Image 1 (cartoon, rainbow, N blue to C red):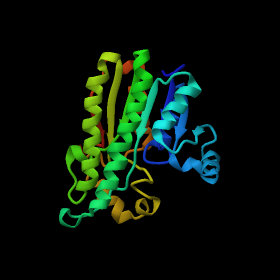
Image 2 (image 1 turned 90 degrees about the vertical axis):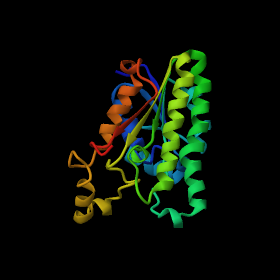
Image 3 (image 1 turned 135 degrees about the horizontal axis):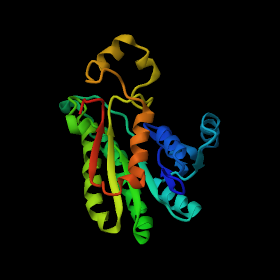
Length: 243
């Protein structure tokens, strides 16, 4: 499905990063992976030991990683912007503004800069797939998580606007919006091992289970393929019916 395609996955150590990279690779794409932690040699070694088939970039900045991937491949067909920031729980009246600013930087400013770098490489070739990994939280709404939902909601809006802007250049831009998907970034092993907490989470999901990262990866692979060439400017929840 993706034979001959080149791809970059950012922040691969977090959220849906590994699943996205492995799924794109399993469908034939050549994949480079970025994470800020890869500036540290031990972090690189640890990740390589766990994922020996994935190729890593050492750039600390996501925009620089885009440039490095395009240079390494000669061009860039697919970019998966997979950003992460903790979903901090706080009632609106006691939410910390510094935390809010940090969340907006991670979930809006950084992906904006990354998308700008992607556009500079894809526009001259008049083709490309730009996929944001965001969240279903702003689609449904989460009490006490307004800081996180606001950042993700901004990213969803940004994806829609960029999609309309880049459509004339034959670049498809979509956002995948997961929730209640198994990921250590948001659901650490100790939480999933707590039967009471797990049952409470599952009770909120109409399909009665948590999603698997590879299920999100397969949706990303579809959006990265030529099968989705007439699909752009969509925010697609993948949350078991919760959103």
